[in-house]
Length: 258
Ligand code: SF4
Image (cartoon, rainbow, N blue to C red):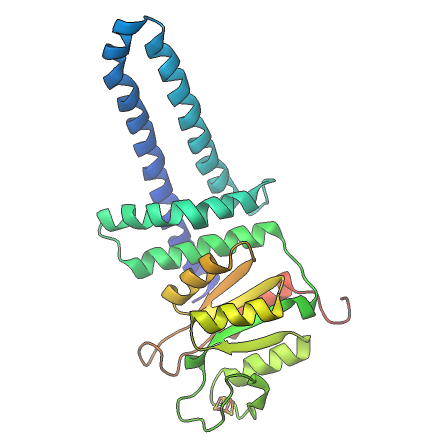
């Protein structure tokens, strides 16, 4: 999947945020309008004070959404994109997934959108770490099913026969002095992260695993690269190496500059 293919997915999430913003305005109006009649009986100023409170809350939420959209459109870190990423990851994502479901959008598409959005926010932060602070995390399914070598635990056992992308990935990691590991599940991925304590992660996986990995690893900056599944899920999957190289170029210092 190329960066261009990511664009519509990112737009989907932004569109859903726009719908959420509209819903917030309508809700705020209703919350103000309905009790106004009752509050007016207690004191004539109360409806206006209540309206002011709701307007402030709505403006804060809408301002957050607006800043998030601007960060995504301009690609610049608007001072607190890290906080925005936290809001997106912890709060907005579950809300947007539920909103998307209401519109009949499938979970994979929404998760792709979330990954594209997360990647853009990480890019906006312009994180650059030393190679020894970076980690490439892979799913086991990138390895050729028929390969006899057990690379889980040590990817460098791969003899680089070139029949699967493990060869390219091990090569790129060794050239750049970056740690590389295969995680057979979320628990092992968390264990590897705790042990290696990286400052930046490039994670390859499917939509579901990347989404949960990005959310679990927060606040660590994670760039998610989707694997391709021409033979179905979890079997002999492929990685677009240009995506990996671009992410490493952008976020990991070259070995001689570190
Ligand atoms: S590239 Fe490495 S992991 Fe893939 S089939 Fe060859 S030896 Fe096995």
